[in-house]
Length: 73
Length: 396
Image 1 (spheres, each protein chain N blue to C red):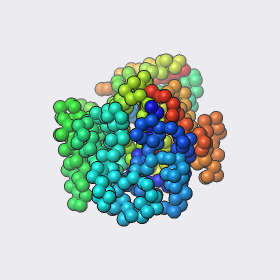
Image 2: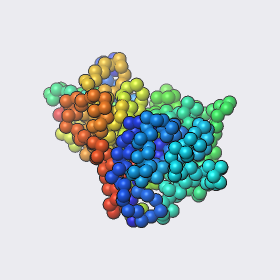
Image 3: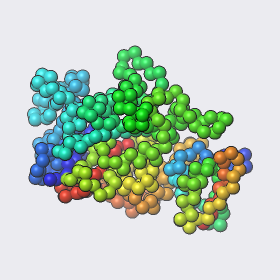
Image 4: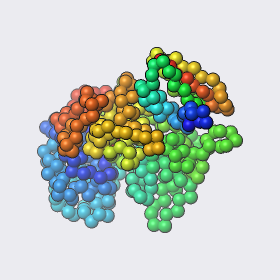
């Protein structure tokens, strides 16, 4: 977890991040976004894939190769 | 021409495993063969050999050898090591023991295995070993070297995929006082096959290597670099290792198998992958490692089936409660969350549940149940038909 309480998933492999996100999104209340930190590679390879599954995915660079990602159904 | 199926087992074969292997092979008994190989062959070495002497499994081995018609080929060097060669030959007349010097056999178990994998068309220009266990505590890495050395001897290209504890085989400066030096063996193979020139393929999973300290983040650049790792092995994402699985070359593991199509070389689809989850979750990395590999394989375009069997059925029973401080994936959540991946299919072996008096937890009540009559079809679904599909089996 980062100091703001936002999960830091930058160390996860793309496969494990995908599994983690699918688990968390199942538990997420639809109206609330899921926020976490990811790397550029993770954003491109994993997070952006969720746009095909009816999720709204946004990201903002927050550091060197670190992005704050927000996902919401 | 019919397809050919096999198991290659180095690890323990408890009575339960011998039992379901017998059941898997039973539908093949009496099947006509047109080539030199029977429909089903079993290669045994290492810990698997001990099972042959175990009276608890005797009934199944007799049935496997004399009722199903499965051909059983054992490593006579390892049987000699265990002091079991004479006992096993006497107990199971007709068992094949290549490399038995007393019987004047010149070619080893490994030559026999490679000849089988080459098949009638002699196509086996490369072969790989998925190494999941570290050296010295386990002899699996010794078997890996023996297998890959024969591949080189016969003019093929060896490939190594180090996964889970298998990445320890790439540790720099190994210096065992008594045992065969595995790091040195891998380096020699890589040199012989031109890994440095990009011809060979010796890879270690980056997630597993990072966890074990072989892939370290540079604080200045943020990028990861190899550390304490022999140059022969390249650390790569699992995704890249699994891209190798799209090829039709044989890939062995400590316990593995597969089906060769009836017309090799004319495969129309990437090989299928059957992952058997055989350990209970959490106490080791086997279950997480197997599931993670299965998900990545399916995401990468390989038709992947996961069968929970033996102790692996504990993954699907009870209500797993994982707290943040446990620092593990909840395996049940992992399975549930990935059930919608198109190329990934989950199933459970119902006799393993019944023997343990277990019931599937509600979430998984709809999961496909494979019974003793159906396991052969599940693992070798097109066995005996004119199949063009290659499939692999890897035990985790």
